[in-house]
Image 1 (cartoon, helix red, strand yellow):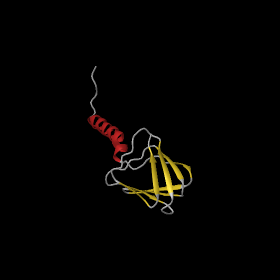
Image 2 (cartoon, one colour):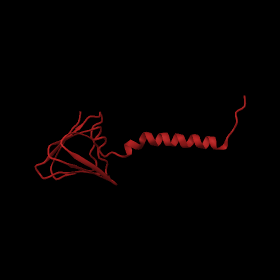
Image 3 (cartoon, helix red, strand yellow):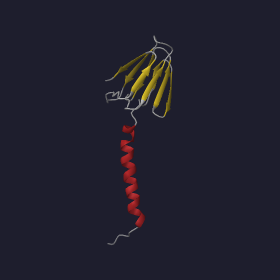
Length: 113
């Protein structure tokens, strides 16, 4: 049996393969904390380039799927004052890696499994 040859067919396969590989590694390229769920208190999240900001009320508790910061990235907690605190519980299985900057004007607690 003969197969028909379509010049663009091989090119399409290569593009699909490249897109699939990129999707697999896309999450690893961005390591700022992911998938926040506020379980107590209040928090707002914003991302601008390599800066991820969290403005939280005192005594806020946030569950995260992952909490890592790559080199060159900044995760900044904006709190009411030096006595304010935020508890961050990482519920995913990967340990946190802080290779960039973790900043806060209050207390920040991280708990990994």
